[in-house]
Image (tube, rainbow over all chains, first blue to last red; front, side, top):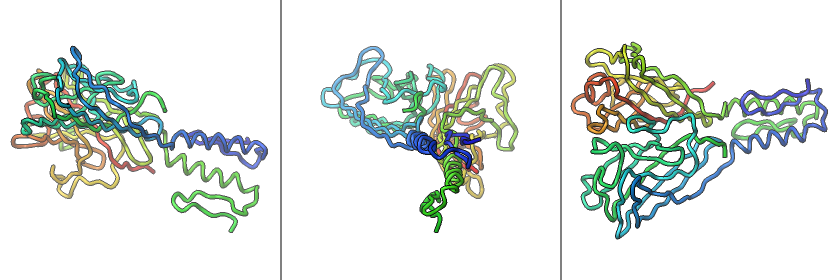
Length: 180
Length: 188
């Protein structure tokens, strides 16, 4: 004997037989383990709004994310279509700040996992605005499912024809591949 | 005093405690923190689909129902998906609505006294996929149905807003559900 460890975090527990000179290193190991779990990380990032065929242009995108423990991220994204917005063509995709955990399947045209909720705001015809659900098309990009639209995902004309002064916002929570 | 304790977690520190006692205090603190955090990795689990009478429903020979969750102290973040496919699918009886189990029992939220849809606390959102997928999908709310189950309620349901065998449409093979939820879990 001398030391045992806790089952989850591996915190070192010296017993009465452990030489005292070893304690500082063990304390340091425990401090590092706790620091890795509990540290706060939060940052802004600039989400990339792209479309599968032609990318849209003239928009402002802002993102904010918070790390909760080693493998969970909360993300908030707000995209505003500026004057002169060009909608591009194809399914819209938005980049994530940290890669999604590989254990969770990414979306296909017919399947996927829900990670959060989005609001699609049509400035020129506000009755067309919708809430919808966020899913992942790749480990670093999301798409938005539409409700009863012509396409499976939000694209340049789904659920409405995207134009200047429209807005797309979402919040999501997801597990990350790497502890960071 | 030989020892005192931190004000929130009750962690011990040794003040004028004999050095011989330090390992015991450290063990207490380490075990306490370890139990508080639990395993900090991503977990998977097998959700169970049932009807309102508790009968387990079969998603079919090539269907699937799977879930993942992440714990932060006693908060649970969970994600899942379901596919009805293949042979042996049991959608339940006419009028049945569905429940899906959570990975950890709920603490502090309620299904309401009567269990009616409007009484359960909302935990997250979901999407219902109809086949063919481009003609009808619906966004739904995941809400507390029992201490360890959610049910789904549609936003624009005609008639019964609870999701089940006949709502918001008559479900068929090839159709799917995806959901997510966040809530306070019951941990020992």
